[in-house]
Image (cartoon, rainbow over the protein chains, first blue to last red):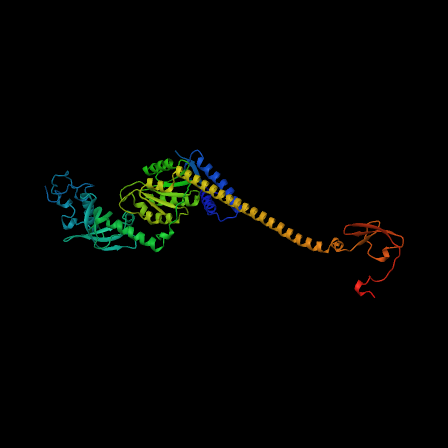
Length: 69
Length: 424
């Protein structure tokens, strides 16, 4: 699950919970899922630093990322 | 100075035909039999003449820019272009060799005012003066505009400029691919803007030539690489500002098609203010500068964190509201339930009272109250039939206000005694 997907799902969940037209069970299940995704997304954002790499194509066509300055 | 050689301040190799015995500048000695072309005996061939003329002309004229109006333009099957440049009183044949046509943005139209850069020469086969064009520009950048327009039309015909094709950029990209020169200012700008806005985002540099004749192929290769790799969320392709020629690769049709074919959302970032490049038209998002592209690609981390906080609060508030609602429902149900229970008890009590009344009415005690008596055996059982009696047996008579102990003197079976009035 990508960060983008996590956030989009979170937005759906928040909107659904905000509408309050769900059963209690649905609400609680969504809330639980939302909290998990919120945690995953927050962790992604709190990672130390993005990497800077250079994309290189090998002679055999394989694609490799190399650390760049 | 002899008229034959005096006028030429020419460069290049001196034609050997005219090289007599004398040193340059000095009049040739009068050796009539040795001077080619001076008599019928020493007549030179036509090819020698045209070759000589060609060498003289090319030596006399350095490559230069000339100005004129295009007429009779012809694109030959062999790839060369032929046309005439003219003005009010003169004209000259021009040729663009096929290998040079690629450097000219578009073929000129007849009537177009152009500036052509090239070498004045002679076309020996026709003995004709000809200008070999290596570069060309039109008044008002007409050739660039024409080239652009032609490419634009082809792309439009294929639907690649349809606004409906434009994809939304990812709102929360984690990996940004950047196709540009690895040592250009553009890369530096993009990197510093992304890092400033959101240092947690990965930057993947995909080096490419962004100007010169190799640029289009290099950009296409880089775009294809990103397309095959597919691990980036968004790709920026661009370079810093430059002259129109510098930016020309971003008007290349092949580059435009590679951008259109990219499976990942694209941002064009060609530093220029004047015009829109073809790449801009095809990309999902157009940024005026590389920095602007980085801003469009990457949201600010703090805003992202704040948004996560907002989402969390909305979720919590929603869930809490739902729980409160459920609790209220529960309370109401509980209230209903106790009310129903109370009513049900009351209903039962009422029925009980009703039944009790009926039971009361039927009670033997009431009969006693009306003056009847019940006979009971010594064991307390009611004796309801003569068969329960035997002479001499002790029994009791229960009456309204007490009991009488008695003994059977005689048993007389038969129907119940007649009512007093009906006897006899």
